[in-house]
Length: 608
Image (tube, rainbow, N blue to C red):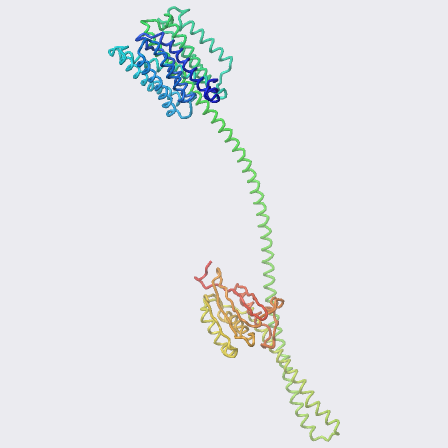
C-alpha cells in the first residue's frame, strides 16, 4: 500500500522508487524460484515473479513495466546465459504481465477485487493464456541462444508455463487481496474464528503437509485434509483470508516437498514439483471460487434484505397514504350523500314551489279571464248609456230651441248642452275605448298562458318571410332595410312563434330613429339542443335602467312613437318560456336594441 501511495503522490522520485522496489522483489523471488530449477538452470516449476508482475500492473498500471523488465533481465543475466537470451526472456516476462493485465480488465471490468466469480474466472483464464507468451518467447530465446537443446523444448515449455500459471493463481491473488481497502474486506467470521482457523491450519500443515509428525502422510494421501479448511475460509471470510490460507498451504507443501517430507515425496524433484503445483492450483482456484460465490451470495442477500426493507417501507408508506386517501374518500362520500340529501330536499321544495306556482298561474289566468269577461258587461252598459245620454242631450237641445228664455239662461244652457256635456261624453267614450283595449289585451295574455300548443318542425325562412309580408305597410312607410341571415329550423307552435317574430320585428320598425336610415337584422345559429335567434335594430334603444322592466305587463316607453297597451314583449316572453327558451335584451339609448331568444331545435338538427 505504501508503494501505491508513493506511486500516486510521490512524483518522479516516487515512480522511480516504485520501479526499483518492484525490480528488487522480482529479482529476489525469481532467485528463490530458480533455486528449484530441474529442467534447466533458467527454467523452474515455481515462479512467483509472474504473480508479482501481474499484480503490479493491475494495481499500479502498465507504466511499471520498466521495473518488471529490469528485474527479469538482471535475474536471467545472472544464470549463465547470453545477454541477448536474457533480454528475450525479459521481453517475454514483461509482455506476459502486460497482456495478462489487459485481458483481466477486459474480462472483469469491475476491478481487481476477487469477491466476484467473474474476476476469479478472469484470473484463471489469464493464468492459462497469458503465460503462453512468456513460456513461448523464453523457450525460443533459450533455444536460439543454445542454452537448451531444441529436443527438450516441449518439456521445457510445459514446466515454464506451469510455473508461471501457478504464480498467477497463488501469488497474484494474495497481493491483490492484501491491496484491498479495509472497508471492502467484509466477512461473517470474527477475529477469534480467524485465529482458530490459522492455528488449525498450522497444525494440519505440521501433521500432514510437511510430514514432520506423520511419516506415512504420502502413503495415505492426507493432503486433501486441507480442503475443509479452505471451505471454512471461503464460507466465513473474505478474499484476503482465503488468499493467505492458500499461501500458507502452498508454502507448507512446498517446504515439505523440498525437504522430502509430506505427501509430495514420491519420485524425483521434477515429478514432485509438478504434482505439487497442480495441487496448489486446484486449492487456489477452489478457495477463490468459493469465496467469490459466497461474497456474491452475501451481496445478493444483503441487496435482497435492503430491497425487502425498502419494500416494507414503501408498503407502510403506501398503506398510510391509502388509509389517508380512504379516509378522505369516506369523508367525500359522506359529504356527497349530505349534498345529495340537501339537493333532494331542494328539488322537492322546488317541485312543490313549481306546482304551487303553476296552480297560482292557473288561478291568476282564470281570474284575469273571468274579470275580463265580467268587466265587459258594465263596460258595454257604460258605452250604451253614454251614447244614449248624447242622443238625449241633442233631443233636449232641440226642444229648448222653441222655449223662450232670457239671454243669460240661454247662454248657460247652450254652453252646458253644446260644450260641457259633449266634452264629458267624449272623455267617457275615449276612456271606455281604452278600457276595452285593456280588457282585450288581458284576454290575449290569458289565452297565451292557457292555450294548447301543437309542436312541429318549422321552416324559419318561410315563417319570417310571412311575418315581413304582414308588416309590409309598416316596412314600406319606414323605409328600413331588413337583413335576413341564417335561420335554422326549430320545433314549436307555428302561430305562437310567428307572434314572437311579428312583435319583435314590428317593435324594431316602430322604434327606428328618425333622420337615420333604418336597419333591422334577423338571424339565428345552433346553440346545443336549441337555436339562438336575434332581432337587431339601430333605433332609439333603451336606457340601462329601463331594460329590466321592458318585459313587464303594461310597461310602455316612448308612447309617442307607437300606440299600444304594453303587452307585446310580455306575451313574447311567455311564449318563448313555454317553449323552453329564454328572452333577453341588450340595448343602448340612441344606438339600438338587440333581442336574443332561444327555441328548441328541429328534430334531427340539434348540435349537442
